[in-house]
Amino acid sequence: MADMNDARAALKHYFGYDGFRPGQEPLIAAILQGRDALGVMPTGAGKSICYQIPAVLVDGLTVVVSPLVSLMADQVAGLEDNGIHAVYVNSTQSPDEQSAALAEAASGRCDAVYVAPERLGTRQFTDFAARNRIALLAIDEAHCVSQWGQDFRPAYLGIGDFIANLPYRPVVAAFTATATERVRHDIVNLVGLHDPQVSVTGFDRTNLYFDVIKATPTAKRQWIERYVTARPDESGIIYCATRKETERLADDLNDHGIAAACYHAGLPPEQRHQAQRDFVNDEVRVVVATNAFGMGIDKSNVRYVIHHNMPDSIEAYYQEAGRAGRDGEPARCTLLWSDGDINTRRRFIDMENDNERLSPEEADVNRNRRRVLLDAMVGYCRTTECLHKYITAYFGETDDVPCSGCSNCDSEFETIDVTDIAVAVSRCVHDVQVLLGPDGNGRPRNLGAGKLTQILRGSDAQEMHDWRHLDTAYTYGKLRDVPAARIRDVIAQMTSDGYLRVEDGKYQTVTFGPRAGETVRQDFHMVIKQVERPAAASSGGYGEGSAFGALGTSRKARAVPDELSGTDAELFERLRDLRTEIAREIGKPPYIVFSDKSLRSMCELKPTDDETFLEVNGVGQHKLELYGERFLPVIRDFLA
Image (cartoon, rainbow, N blue to C red):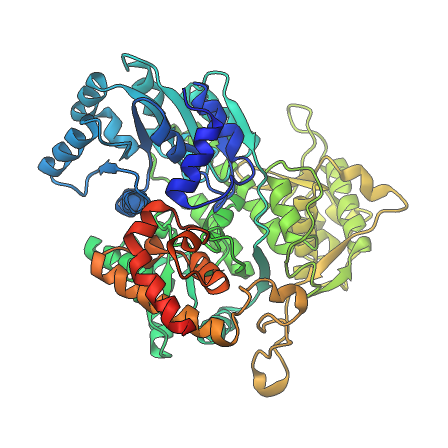
């Protein structure tokens, strides 16, 4: 039986790495010992290594269940480039190609076969599984099994039945980047993991700089144009909420001389495929996409992800933002949002009615669940605390996370003391409950945020005087001079912070949250973010030092890779050109040949022989054999 010494040797031989990353060893050790495993690791932390290393060591075949049909070919190409033989079977292949792939997997020469979850239920694959011993079943993006995960996929529910019908139960290992405790519980139960080794390595991506900007649609577009134009050599993804916004922004960037691809589900399949291939092959530097771009991207050198609109959950945002910096190098994630984004997302939730399998009651529960997720996303936009800490706390990580870079900790906003407003809001909720009295079940009656705002501002609407005498409330008119928008902002922040809670029914109403009691304490204090950031005064643009500017301070400078200087920068360009040339020759994305991180390592080490070349980060024996004869002469000539 293979052990961790074998695993470390395989890591160096196939992948060129000297050691495992945090969280990988316990999972690999468990799998090699025949134990089930559940790994929750942030994007870029090396989840795939946890089943790829066992795949070359266990006696039998590894089946990888992955929803990424559009990415399987690249994943298999990456393994082949590292000397690991793998195949994939999915709907993009003809029946003859599928049969040939399964025959190769059954031959004993293959280490891994990638399949989509829908494939497990086909007669072809169940027959294959019955005839061939599966030693390890690895489930990628395992959060798709849970309706509390942002990418719920019904086909994942069939994985448990597939395992139960196998003649021999394999070791089962599930992996995900974004899973709350509730989702992790679902994964264990719905997949049927047996006493798994559970490793949650932490959700913080310390190489990512998080930035939140509230802006009008026009200001968003201008910010994106300036940011992307200033970075012609960097790859980036821009997410939009709708297809129309995606097309409009892509056209706008192209009109400004920025080669940008457009990607959304309404485009013909061949156009989507071409956009993705152009992006991963560095033919275009920017792709503007809806969340249909989803998980189908494994490009390691994405230096920035910009959200043109607010996503509908922290899970969705973190997964999409996590496309940046997969190589471990610094990258930036900027969220541009407006109050209109919140209204749009709420409207999408209210209008959604595309799941005919749900009863009306179940549909209501699902909508309420999505509103809860959206509230957390709104809280992220409005919070004044560290953005890294907000995200990790959302996923249940209670330890203090030192900020590795975010706009909140860099104080790129002003705060407003809203203590008096918050106290008045809390008192108003109490007044409403007293005036309206209990409902038929003895529970307090409540009103929505709009009605509370009317009471606090002393609205002269007739219903204030007629209905339950709301104009007699102690807080009636208490905030007469405070803008309604400010009161709504405070109510939203109090909801995010737990002082209030929004209850769903025919209408949303506001009631007390678990921290409501704190608002009557003498030491209660509350501030909110002044989120409207002014543009730089000069020429109406966004200067380097302005809130809409580029990275300016020393902390923020860490959000971009350290620039190679002098001769190293020249060597990097030569190596990058060679990488592009080789990638085009073999028909693979450049990052599969070598990552930017490996090229930077070559610039630092400047290897001139095979032995030194193997010391480069990410260079294993197979890559040395494939590419050493091409890269080493370029480095030698450069040094000469």
